[in-house]
Amino acid sequence: MKLAKRQEARILHREWTEEQKFKIVLEGLRSETPVTKLCEKYEISQTQYYKWRDMFMEHGKELFTRAKRQSKEERMEREIVKLKKIIGDLTVELKKNEYE
Image (tube, rainbow, N blue to C red; front, side):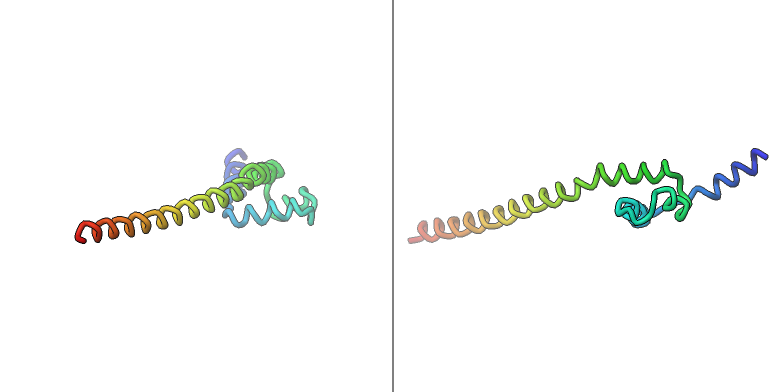
């Protein structure tokens, strides 16, 4: 009997892609379906759903932080390119003045 339960537990254990988890959590957050029905529909435990939801809520803010950081890095990269051009122009100007 114990062996059958272990085999059944292995069958129920599935790997979910990030996209699938996102879709399930989003569906739950939109309140389109009660969590109990949602879990039945996708054959997951409520505990699993709430773990995914909590991860989503905790790490969702990183999207905005990352975007802000990338924007700052892009600005800095543009500034570096601009400054390198200025340095190059000044170097050429100095070389010209040396030969005059």
